[in-house]
Image 1 (cartoon, rainbow, N blue to C red):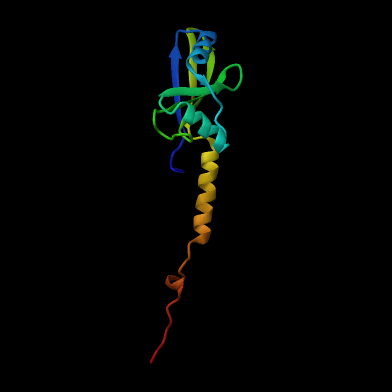
Image 2 (cartoon, helix red, strand yellow):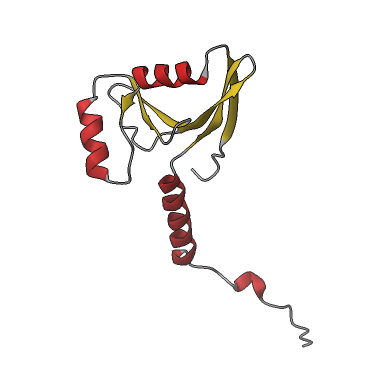
Length: 133
């Protein structure tokens, strides 16, 4: 899990930023993923048999998009954290595909716990002795 690094993605479109965001608003199911397991579970149960894109807009030009596959439990899945900016020929959509922050935090805590609970053998660190018999 910790080996998954964010991947940057960028695409140019002839649509204006306003039209891109309006299209996102129309195609996405509005849902903000949280660390609250009950909230995520309820959302996944409601869309158990649907393959959907869900997410929300964080501000005027930023958004987050996640994908849910039918009959899968994928609450901590990789999402797209992106922005839309105006260009001379339309707009540019750019951002990163990454796991939610809480997934990385849980991974770090798990790694630290495993390191502290793993017994360490120091027998290979003994120094050779010059014993003459």
